[in-house]
Length: 397
Picture 1 (tube, rainbow, N blue to C red):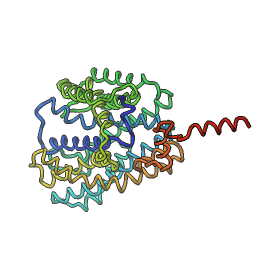
Picture 2 (tube, rainbow, N blue to C red; picture 1 turned 180 degrees about the vertical axis):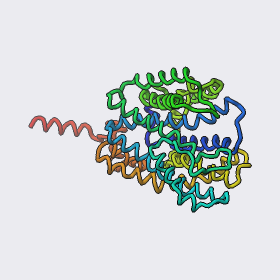
Picture 3 (tube, rainbow, N blue to C red; picture 1 turned 90 degrees about the vertical axis):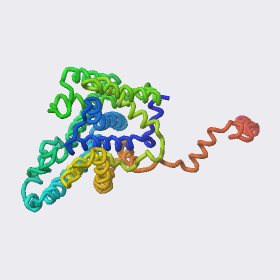
């Protein structure tokens, strides 16, 4: 079976997988925020990479589908903006006016003094262009292992947006349906990764390194979508892909070998799983991703730094889920519901409406018609001889 046949946009586990990836990011961040280090270089590379890389691979697959299904620039950009920006801006505001003041109060300072200063509004405004450049708020968070940074997860959003814009640019240039484009971009990005120093943690990450990392994973996902009618969807290949990802962690940059295997393992397994419990209509992954790190910082300030990283990650995940749910139901979902109104009655509008619905149940007439097509002709027409005679009589008149 090919991936094109296995993947059902209404019946897959990709939302569940994105939630798992967001949780993996929580687990990874639980080490540096509590002052711990993962000693194994191979495990550390996978820990600080797989979560975000998986997000980019799935995005490459789904965003390519979005453009090809509705290749209109305005509709596409509106849809992407409504998915990313409302939740992002509210997260900035909550971090600046809730998390930071609470942290000051816990540490015996004056929360009112921070709120009356220009620091919170500066944090919101200076990060409003999605590029996360202003890391702290009035010197907070302070006195913790990862001080001075409120949200280390937000760095990836600007690269996600740039990938969205790249898809639109490729589409406007008339190259979206050219199957060689995504393999070419993937090959160029891999060459760039071979030339540049690998990303390490801890370490200083440069713009070229981050651009190459994002391009590799997004292009890997896009390639799987563009070649979905040729790519087999098999659990055996998923298993092989997982092994390749694990073994490639021994390399300085595992992505040069494992970008496609990682994308394949996630997307194909997500397509093959049709369990109703994993078909999540409530997508908490984005909320978990953007609220987890400030929640973890606040937990450290509250004195939970002595917990082991795994226990700390569990506590952080539990504390983050309510915030993610509030983000989805009060911000993200209402924003997405405006998509149809803003982009009119085109394919994008229909797609946005479908996103909020469960799989459609066929009407009685449709079911009867479908059932009749499955029956033998003699059963569908119980008296074919009589029907033939009537046809002959009408032809002689």
